[in-house]
Amino acid sequence: MAERAIGKPDYEKELRRAGIRMTRPRRIIVNILSETEDHPDALEIFRRAVALDSSISLSTVYRTMKLLQGIGAIHRHAFEGGPSRFEQAGGDHHDHLIDIETGDVIEFKSERIETLQNEIARALGYTIVHHRLELYGRKLRRKG
Ligand SMILES: [Zn+2]
Image (tube, rainbow, N blue to C red; front, side):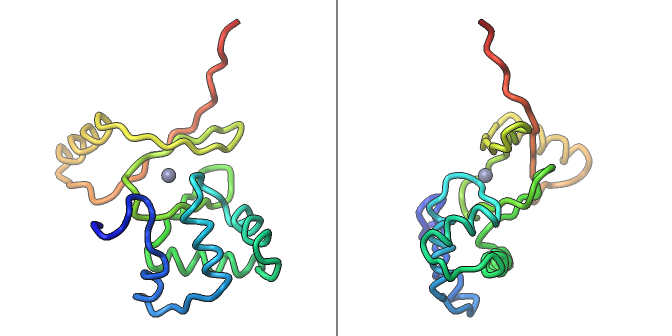
């Protein structure tokens, strides 16, 4: 959307539009989400939030994530072998590679894959409205 900076959704505006009150814990949590570059799980968001305000509970974090997901402000990823991880919505489309040893999530985008997916869908008589691609990998060891 034109009015928002790339990758930085205006959560406050989206919450207000959805008729949801911006409380102090919610503000802290949305600030964490809009500043993070990684894909934290709820526990990690809780750890960061509680460092800023010790009165924030894990259930507040869970409720807030549900709320933000409900209005489409964040994406929840159910990557294999771990808890749900979150990232802000509104950024450019990308896919994810998950390091199965460290749990690191690496973002990538391939025009070749995007094109190929469209070709496959078209051949099957479909147009893609949404897709998720997850690669699970182990880091190559350098020789020597
Ligand atoms: Zn991502």
